[in-house]
Every structure is written in structure tokens, then in C-alpha cells.
Amino acid sequence: MDFDQNNGGGFQKKMFHGNWKCAKCGADITELPFDPDPSRADKLLCRDCHRERTRSFRR
Ligand SMILES: [Zn+2]
Image (tube, rainbow, N blue to C red; front, side, top):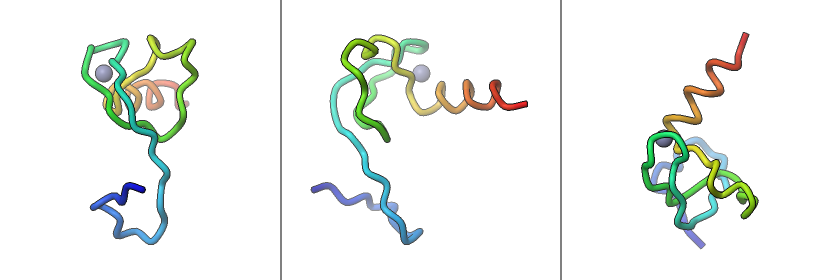
């Protein structure tokens, strides 16, 4: 079990650990808030790219 050092909010977010690469910027991804589908492992985005993408999706 891993415990986030940043756990001051009172709720725990389950994180999945592994070795992935961001499809956009190529950064290493070592943890994700979801369990990635292996068939989509080459389309994963790091936290920064994912944030930008979700922001651009918002209307
Ligand atoms: Zn990225």
C-alpha cells in the first residue's frame, strides 16, 4: 500500500503505479489515477498534458 504524502484533504485517491510514457510530450508517467487499458498504453498523457486537454474540452 502506498500512502500519498500529500494526503491532507481527508479523502484518498487510489493511484496505479507503472511505467508509461506521455504520448504528447514523452514524459515518464509513473502513476495514474486510473488503471490504464494496455491497448491504450501508448496514448496516455502525463498530468500536465491531461490537464491541458481536459481544459480545452471544457466549454
Ligand atoms: Zn505530457
